[in-house]
Amino acid sequence: MRKKKVILFVLFSLLIFVGGCAQKKTSQKIITTTVNTYIEPIKSVVGNKYKVESIIESVNVDPHSFSPSSNDAKQIADSQLIVSSGLGYDDWVNKIVTANNQNKNLIDFASDVLHKKDGDNEHVWFGVKNVQKLSKSVYQHMSKVDPKNKSYYQANFKEYNLKLTSLIQREDALKKYTNGKKAYVTEPLPYYMLKDLGVKIANPHFAKSIEDDTDPSIEDVKNMENGLKNHKVSFLVVNKQVTSGIITKMTGLAKKYHVPIVYFTETLPNDVGYYDWMDGNITQIERIVKK
Ligand SMILES: [Zn+2]
Image (cartoon, rainbow, N blue to C red; front, side, top):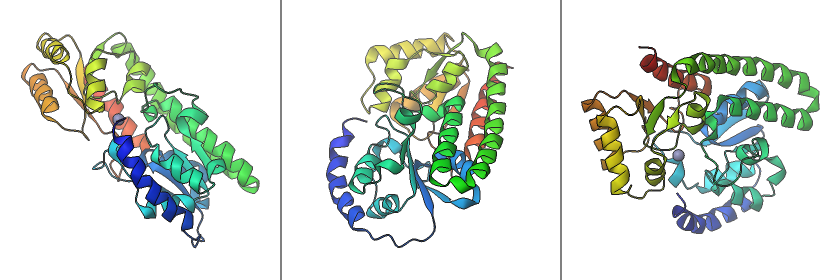
């Protein structure tokens, strides 16, 4: 992921200029988030008071190599609130935000809400408790900028919070089956979810290589091949949004040796909200371990 930043920076210099010059024509109040993952947690709080849109809308885009268009920059400039994921995941947004004096309207999920530090796993939305904190933070922010609707935002937040609590309860129940188990992942995607379930990621080094777009070491590959063959893990988690020769090979081996495969997406399919997406992730693991 890191090496892509240099190329992206050049693009941004152009985009920031366009963004900075854009005139604020839209009358409809809008909240913009970088990835579609956060639309529902925000929308659930602001209800009909704001339009909520994301810059990255599809699972066909790899967020790690995304670069914004001038229209994206304009939309961010015109937004009443911007929600980013943080930890370098959507660094492109920070330059646009700064260029448009939007810093006071930015919530950086990982650093402002979760107080994460550089080097922490960036896929923070895989933790349901994390997302609860995000919607609380949106409620608190909105109550300040729009105090006359505070009770509306508060009621919405409470309702959504309860909904997410039901997911946490399912994870807690599932933990009785998963605690202490091991899994392989093709990328460090579900780190927070597996942590909540007490599942240890048995190939962190391999997963990091795939995410960094580097070739995993021969030793890492060998270890994983042996692990699959000898059932050293309960399941393999595959990021559906990224494919490569080595992932196809590992998926093939898992099938051959009957190691169950769990398919996750990094962002959300555009017809699915956060709750249903996470619900589906939990269900996939439930089916495997409760067999
Ligand atoms: Zn990722």
